[in-house]
Length: 295
Ligand SMILES: Nc1nc2c(ncn2[C@@H]2O[C@H](COP(=O)(O)OP(=O)(O)OP(=O)(O)O)[C@@H](O)[C@H]2O)c(=O)[nH]1
Ligand SMILES: [Mg+2]
Image (tube, protein in one colour):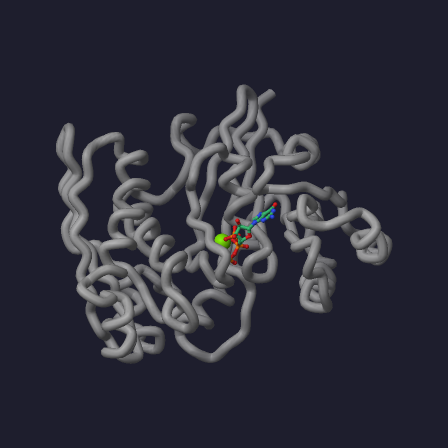
């Protein structure tokens, strides 16, 4: 019997949703960073087993806000829990609070099994965690609780096994070699954004987006030029850095990752463009790949 289905992974920003999906799939499908609000697009990570296909839906960390981008992110999480076969609510062991309980509570009426997974147990202790686990146990509608470490790949099997139990019989929805629904162009733009998130400080990371201008793939060489869109002249200067040092650092790190991915040499050219208020501009958002219609 072949089993398949969609599994939404939801949770507050920075709890490790993308890290977990990458670990389960065994490929880097989604970028991760120590800064909250890293994931912006709903994307799929596909885990292909001998007799199953689990399709994980990665979502932006839940947040509230009125800007166009924030609304997009919120909608994206809501829509991710529709038409799935299971829901994983992910928590950070060191930071469980009311927002997590509210999010779990919100899943009460769901018709599909809800799993509550506590991540980052490598940096917590059972003694500290115990009161929270005891409280979580009061949610009787939850199908199963699992504690694990996505980063250290600890106890991932417990989750996979539990998910497999509830997965319905079904066909492989995607080619069995495929591990994401996104194309290379998208993944490349995300890798540039990941390095920008890593190296830039304060408010800047959240004010940027990356757009691929040209993408030419040959047998041994991939030529890419991309634009980092930011929201002010001041940000532009910081992103470029003195004598272009910051931009170079972002580019070098991104190029190394893209070379691994494409298994070719990569020629990566980065530009910085100011586009004030892009986060509120529907047209701009859609051009950058954040379109409500796509959710
Ligand atoms: N120590 C530890 N850190 C982890 C673990 N899982 C994830 N992290 C770290 O937590 C940070 C956030 O991880 P992400 O996977 O980007 O979190 P996310 O939930 O996808 O975040 P958003 O996309 O912003 O909502 C990164 O620095 C990860 O390396 C874990 O099991 N242990
Ligand atoms: Mg993420």
